Image 1 (cartoon, rainbow, N blue to C red):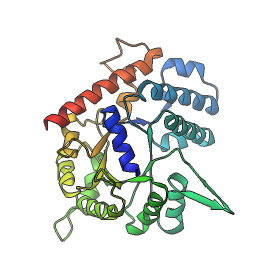
Image 2: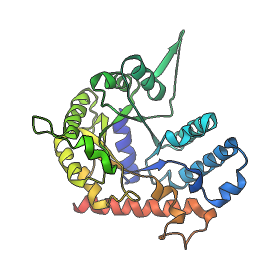
Image 3: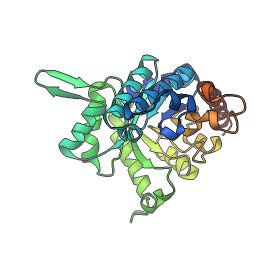
Image 4: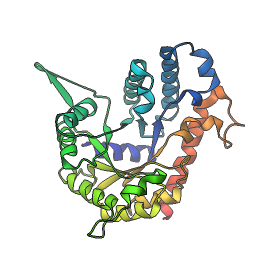
Length: 309
C-alpha cells in the first residue's frame, strides 16, 4: 500500500477528511502551559510539545493526519527542531499520518538532500539514516522537473508522498499563479498539469497518486477546475476556517465518490478553546476538549457538504 492509499484508508477509517495543522506560536498557548513552562526557549519548547501531545491525544481516533509547519519550530532553534521531531514521532505512535509542511524546493544535490531529510534516506558509509516518522512533505516545484525528480525517486523507494504547491490560499497568490500563458492556460493550471503527469508512476489502488497537490480553499472556482483537470491527483486544501474557506467551497475538491482531498485546519483547531463557539464551555485547562469538539463539528460540516455538493 503506497503513501496515498494509506492516507485514504485512514480517512475512511475515521470518516473524516481533515488534517490538523500543528503551527505553534507562543501567544497561542493557553495560560496553563505558559505558566508551567517559562524562563527559556528550551522550557517553552517543552510546553509546546506537551500542548501538541495533548491535542494529538484528543483527536487521534477521529482525525487521520497531522501537519506540522516547520517554520514554527525552526524559529526556536535546536530546541524547536527537537520538539518538531518528537511531535512527528508521537503522532506516528498514535497511528496518524504525518504531513510535514516544509515547502522545500531546489535543484540538483540540494533537492536530493531536502528529499533525503524528509522522506528519503542519507547513506553514510554502509548505513542509511532517515526519518521514518514522516509520510509526506510539501514541495515548492516552481524550479520545474529538476526540483521534483529526487522527491519522486524517494517516494518510489520508501513508499512516501509529496504535496506540490499548485494554487495557494494566500491573497496575493494570483500575482503570479493566475497569469495566463500564450496557450491560454494559467500558471497554476500549467503546474497542475505537470503534477498530474509527474504522478503517473505512483498511482495507487485508490486511483490517486502519491504525487499530490496543494490547492487553496479560498479560491473555490479554481479548486473545481483543477479537480476536473487532475483526476489522479489528491488535494491538500488549506484555507478552511480561520482563512475564510467554507465547507461548501472545499467540497469542490472532492470526486463523485467523496474522496480526493484532505482539508487542513490549524488555528481553528489548535485555538478552539479561544473561539466564540467553545470559550464559554471549556476553560483554558480544557483546551484539548475544545479541540476535539471543534474537530467533530468540522468533520460533520465537511461530510455534509461533500455528500450534498
